[in-house]
Length: 293
Length: 125
Image 1 (cartoon, rainbow over the protein chains, first blue to last red):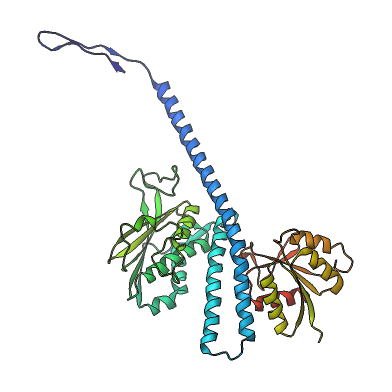
Image 2: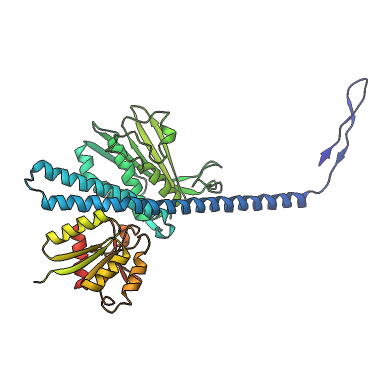
């Protein structure tokens, strides 16, 4: 429908006549809708291609890194074992040093192994996983650290069994990283709260995944996992950088700066999102959103 | 009991030095070392080892090429070969630090001496 300029009486300023031209634009609207859909599909395909290319580049980087780092690591491990077998006058301290070096080498190898694992798409095995059970298993796994650091765990699961489509090992790696970070943020003890709930997407822009097409429709259910601590928090300056590789606020011997970037990449491979909120001296909360199984 | 003869072919000379030391310290093995595929084939033909540990990624001649050549030499064609690689991940390795891929055995680096010995004994039976 189109309205032409009204005819106005010059003396009074009143509208004398209005011309309205109507035409059927159903076909045009339809065509525009089709065009929009095609454009969205194209954007989605393009994003997927970019994502695939990124993953391929990451795969190449991981393979190169693995080769460059694992060979010298092997020399360190074999060398320490050689010293351990041949060293005369071994005492408690030298034995402790040998153990520490081996542990550090193992830790480095684990980082590389994880890099290799998640950079290979074929290696992810998606199955319906009970998130609550997986969290319980993970908490048991790091129980000694929790007790050592005087930390209380508060768990709140909205339902007994909440299932998401996930690679169990990879998702567990995310929980391990987040829980370890929470422990590190509370050197004098504190509390870790873990909440799992299903939530209805209420906003048109409620995202699942980082791609342009990764939105929930209003009313769809998403599984939300929150892990929060009562630790020292992260400053506003540091907060945007926490998912960047090699960013760390920990001491050199404690943090690699890879834990959260790994978590981000793993959740991304699940077509989910991970976000963070923090207040200095009050605590930090990580929120993961996944598609329910 | 005769010590088992092991040949390690790897371009990392420090690795050769330590693996040789660690295996020989157990008293169970006599270890020969070669820092290139060419040298490895010569030693294998001459010494007829019970088992060969062979690095895949080597300059000039890859581990794969070395294995092919060894399989055509009468003195070495039946010698079991375990490939060493830094590229397969731990979870791809079965118990004992060893895995079979397309009929070949692989060990993922880094591996501790204990696991390496288990893998060798496992292969030699």
